[in-house]
Image (tube, rainbow, N blue to C red; front, side, top):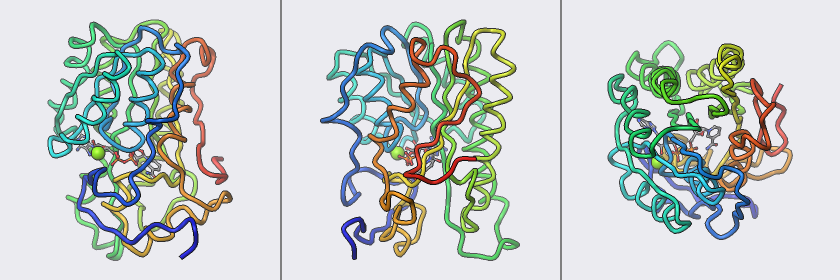
Length: 285
Ligand code: NAD
Ligand code: MG
């Protein structure tokens, strides 16, 4: 075991924060805001835990009110995120629901806009993967379906519905992955959705540019979140992130500033159609 190693551990999806050892750093004690999202309303899918929680905390400290989507079984994580958001004096709205269901996904932005009094930023962050042990030809349709519906279909549905509320100056930030560039065979289906998200990000930026709406993505490398112990084998967890040039996994707190930058109308007003890597040194091209 090196200094950067994680204790072997396993959870069932979707995974919970409290069961992780060590518990991830979401910027609770470190993130300092400077009004870069003042007065904006943001919807963050999968905002209960991991990168989504760090984004919610950072957005709130930058002055945004935040609605978060998550699965009903993640209620305790969602409430913890809400606690940090309201501590800053901003509004937190909790919107449980399974985004693989079309009606639920399409309704989410409506619920968020109604509760926040409008919508300025959409963060498509919810995602699912499952490391594959079987041969490629044995992957079932149900397995493929869960990954595609969570990572791609839901992104289409939520974004389509959000566009009824997003106006000039608003923006969309998608969560991509290093897997779009350096795919692992065990995550073949997941990696393909992340490559599609990159393609969609650029194309939607072109489509929505004339409406004054910016579209970007963040491509994280290996980040210590509940998704990992819930979907990767224990032996992978122990070495998680050590294959990066920086030699370690990243924390959610280290990814959130990229989302803040891309969402900020003042900092990134001319940035659209780009994918920003936060990968510990792995190439994103
Ligand atoms: P996480 O488990 O904390 O967050 C993923 C969230 O997705 C869950 O909390 C859950 O609320 C949501 N979700 C999953 N299925 C859902 C469904 N059917 N309906 C509604 N919500 C659903 O893990 P994370 O790593 O922070 O993941 C956030 C995003 O970051 C994902 O898109 C993931 O692909 C991406 N990402 C993660 C890493 C990493 O190493 N952790 C690397 C690259 C990209
Ligand atoms: Mg979660």
